[in-house]
Image 1 (cartoon, rainbow, N blue to C red):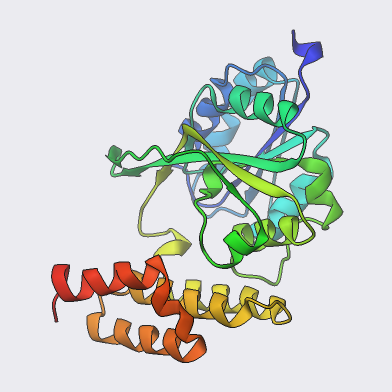
Image 2 (cartoon, rainbow, N blue to C red; image 1 turned 90 degrees about the vertical axis):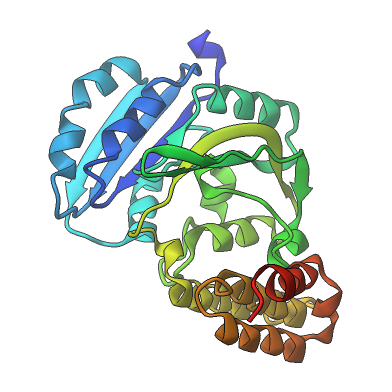
Amino acid sequence: MTEQQPLVSIVIPCYNHAQFVQETIQSVIDQDYQNIELIIIDDGSKDNSVEKIQEMISACEKRFKRFEFRHRPNKGLCATLNEALEWCEGEYFAPVASDDLIKPYKTTIQVDFLLRNPSFIGAFGSAELLSKGRTKQKVKRKYAEYDFNDIFLHKHYLPACTQLLRLSRVKEINGFKEHLIIEDWSMWLFLTDNGGKLVCLNEVFASYRRHDSNISADLDIMLRGRLQIINIFKDKELYTLAKANVMLVQGRDTLNTRKKGSIKFILKAIVSNPRCILTKSFLSYFVNIFFKNPL
């Protein structure tokens, strides 16, 4: 059976996740898909992540077609993922953060879909939210297909922890851009820029762990990262609307902590492209600020 399955390269970049990384590795071990190579790189952790990973080496060597583990000084997430890409030998590529968990059936379902649908570059699914060890939010999204414009305008649901991408396509665009703050959104835009689609399947594939060290919790950094990526595609016809949508996203994300400040982002969105007032994002913000979170 293994010989008939395409090899899948699963990569775990680890940084200061000693309390979570063993659970993450175990979730990969528990995949019901057999033909997997696992590559783990510890990116200069200052806690005891390396020791925790080393405790799992024996189990990994028994389970996987190929297993590699490396630890060295810190270089950053994108550099770590690109280093792993140089090792990858699979047909498919799935990075998994060292604090997230993937469901046992994830790889099997995604590979089966991509084998039957060669026009898609990658497959995703829904992710449930974990906080303090408990599932706080369990959402199962409907099947959806996304092209470049959908992703550019934030009309997509593509949880990074659920992704499975065609490795050849990732290497064609030279992997991750190390100067960019947000590695996943930029990757999906570069992958779909010249055609091709990503798909979100109607399955829950992963558990995303939310805690204080998540970069996505720093809203100012995320704004800089989104604008950084938007500006790469200034020549696109939808550029001003995409920029407006970035401001809408920031307005929504800051609504609970900086209500008055969030209005400034909405005004910037309207200035960038007045058409944004016709979007679902604008309507959602309007409902939230005036009915659910009145000033």
